[in-house]
Image (cartoon, rainbow, N blue to C red):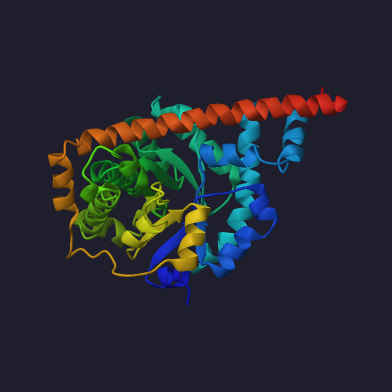
Length: 366
């Protein structure tokens, strides 16, 4: 039994935090599904920006879209849905086997909407989900203050949501509240409560943010402590009267997803965060490099349990060392949103440039 199978068998789903046309065409993603027990996939603007800049895998699709006079944003969503449709088919068996609890792919709304009117995110979420027509597609909406309203409204509209860019227990609980409000409104309106969601808590960026600012004894421990604290809140919420009532009405539980679990410190274990945050009924979405490292030499050791916690003590040590944990959570969410905007702008500029190049090379596209 390899490490990924062992992780799968203790009840933590493995999702891949990567996608590219070459990965699909070469059969590499299928290999991960078949041999490494990968049961889902996430994507973001940075991932797609990287994918479209390497090779010519997307040229034909861009050319066809350019011929139709589509904008750079429209072309991007067309490319993304082509990839995600192929990936979703690979995960459909897991989706059916688990009754919709696993086997998902994710597509993000425009990052430009993160701090704008919630209605704009809701409109795009509904449009993208309808356009894709995939039963196992999550639409990603960041858990910013504006995003929370968009999450509630999208869930009420019946759109499955992956809440992204969560950096603290408080942000996680706010996203869970938005999800449950959407479900409760559906029940009040006589609609089905069976709308899935996951809440993605980001891990490694915490330690990158305090690198060189804390004692060596605290090095690479902040992200894990935040993850543990969020998992404890997740366990407590699952046992709450509110969640139990919704489950009794047929609603699914919004699962906790550990994101950004690739190690950024070259001197630390490349499986550090994966091994530290193994917990049943959760998801770990890993960069491809981290997935392969864990499959090769990862270990499934003690699981996170509600009875044993070091996170409170560790977080107090960081506060004593001068780290404003709550303030840093807000900062990281803002920086994460800004980083995705930067990738988004770069991605659309590249697609527009590529469209122009293809028109020059193909007179019929001028």
